[in-house]
Image (tube, rainbow, N blue to C red; front, side):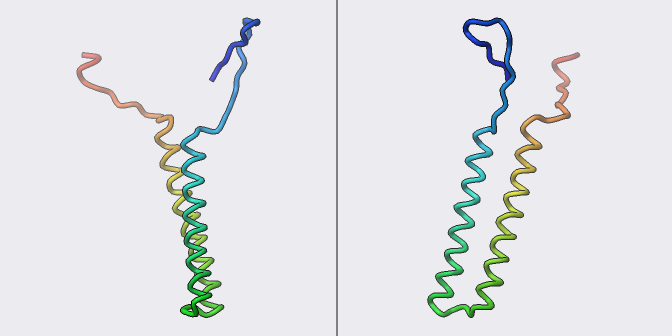
Amino acid sequence: LTKTQPNSSKKRLTMSVPTPLIIGTIAYLVLAFVLVGGVYASLAAGTLSKDNAAIGQVVVLVAVFSMWLFWLCAWLHQWHPLIMPLYAGKDD
């Protein structure tokens, strides 16, 4: 990404986090909070013991982190593809 200053002819390189990464990360954080809240609600309702609730929290956090990491890898893979498709009609 390059931006030019209005009063100078020099180009300045700026880097920023793409917006879809921020939105997707926030969505997975919300999912994690909802699921951990469900574990706490089950603990408060008495359907889970203290030990099972602790295991549930670990399972939920590891699962959400794994899903986020898979989504991140898939998104980054499609962001700037290294191999571009070659169409038969263009170069013939």
